[in-house]
Length: 321
Image 1 (cartoon, rainbow, N blue to C red):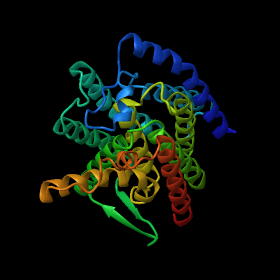
Image 2 (cartoon, rainbow, N blue to C red):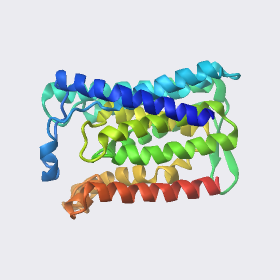
Image 3 (spheres, helix red, strand yellow):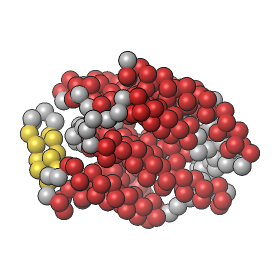
Image 4 (cartoon, helix red, strand yellow):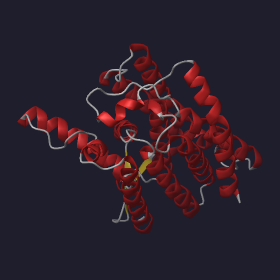
């Protein structure tokens, strides 16, 4: 009942907030700037409202707040706030980036160095907050049924790498209508089930709120999209998922759970290295979803196949964890 209620509250909140947020984004001319080297089919999307991630952020916060008022947490209150802190801290990076893009009237906002700097700063911040409860930090190794205990220095370094990798990989997956939202919805369902297995109310309620809010967002983002997630959405989503990963000790398992994020990020890295060392591109365009667009795949087909891959990975991850 708690899972269903959290999902329904988030869904209704997101659906109610969506038209208001989209209207305000249009009023303030918060339109998406399209990459000039991107697929020509995307040119018509120029000006579509961005920063639509605010829809699911509102849905998550409303649902999670209400559920914690109805079912007051019996454990550590700070731990209940962890996923909210991850959501909002990294969402702030995306918000600043989106505003910079709109102000500059181009598809690039903050520089890569600025983004990485903010990622590191916020990762250290959330690592410090979480360390109050996690010390000593234990890293669970899938399949081997073993754990690794990290000292303070290694813990902070790992958290920086993990949060930076997840948030940027989720951000790269946000490139076509419905892709990032659909994949992330399936990942959220994994954390609902995993939270139930662990008997962790904070994980269960937040993941349920996340799933319901993403379903509401997809109502507005499904092809053809009426609004885009924007970096405020993708970075917030990455921060939230990374936090759930730490809370459930599935940081290494996340490589399988979020395999699509990993592939998207790897395709960019491979493309850059190949071009800089060989002067040749491996993919027609990166991230890899654009490669398939260039091959003639429709956006709906790409979303469907990538979502199916995620569902299979999530099922395997649940079985082996």
